[in-house]
Length: 287
Image (cartoon, rainbow, N blue to C red; front, side):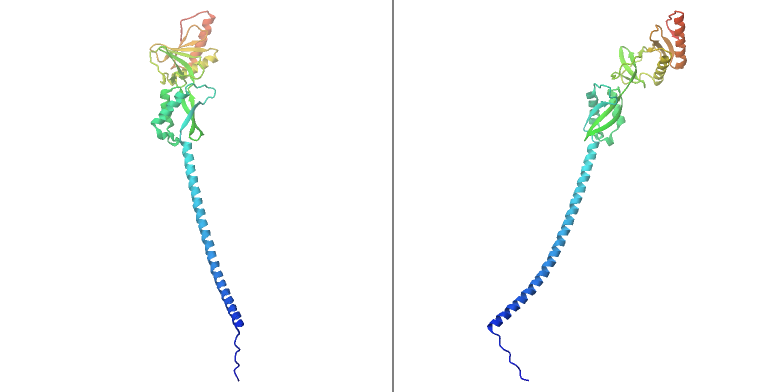
């Protein structure tokens, strides 16, 4: 079979063929570059997401750390006594020595600076220090927070059951027998005159609990008998005997604090009635 001769391409056809080959090559290059670009884009997005996660973790850790520090600071400020005021547990009392009480407490804190933190405060030592200078303070009822590092000391003051006169000096005595000079309550009607010669001073226990208990019991029993005891006198060199004076009666009764108050008050009431009926006025009644 005879071989057919190929017809040579014209210049125009060659140019068109070259353009087609270039176009095909460009399409291949485009597809390849597009694939590479897509992979790079995917990698870039993953990297950015990872960076964002790390950034979020850092921010979360920072805010947690900040919250912990803030909490510790608030806890410290809620425990640290930087300033304080003085008030009475009895809202009806008018306190005149707030500055003196505050100065004494400040003096204690100056000597024990670590105790400005409430957790380290020894209230027993503090009240003992305050009572040494101000025996009229019975106790610290509460230390109340009123602001950051601001507190309120609520003091309870001693209530006098009698005024105590000894050596020309007037003191007050509470139900525990402790004496003090500064009284914020009304003066008690009962006066105790001490002629025993024992030196009395503010802040000391000048009367035993047995003595105070006897006097209080006698006053209560006398009221039940219609008698108002206004004065109790401790004779010279006597620790067990007292002279009891009743309002409207000119003579006292000598009583022993070691004996029953009930029997002695009852006998004194009967004696008063008997002497009044017979119009007698003895120097004293010895019970």
